Image (cartoon, rainbow, N blue to C red; front, side, top):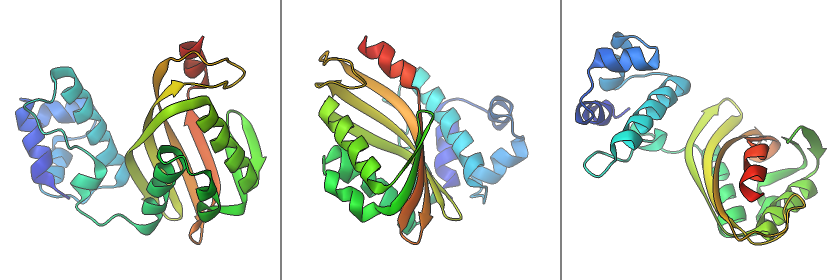
Length: 208
């Protein structure tokens, strides 16, 4: 882990190890461990990433190190399944390639989202097609990825323009941004279950 990068950001923010520990709910001993290169688990690192991002957003990043992410801090090659998930967002949404669904998802994949449980890769295809029909342009950024056993969790941020009917709402031309996360469980190198978490009511409120 690139502890020196974490330390540099802390110092640029003018924070002590004790202050960071108090703000994140961890001990200053753990802060020292991080800055010495770890190791720590994914959730712990994510907590610190989130905290530093919050602080950077408050002061602006023009003179500060902006590249605070799991990938840059871990200094480890991205695992194959994380690459699959990252490519999924890039190809299906950013490149608007609906056919990419078949390359990533198991035919019997389960989708859990918006309070529903749906079955089959065709459901994923329809979901992606509906999003792309409703929003153009659309750009989604995967902010961080975490892997545990056969599961990858992606935290993402999307900016999109409402150009077509979506959720029964006629196109407004509004450009909106939302954040969310997706959990992908793998069977081999295919996604067998996916759970999407995002604020549906927030999206509706921004479009109405």
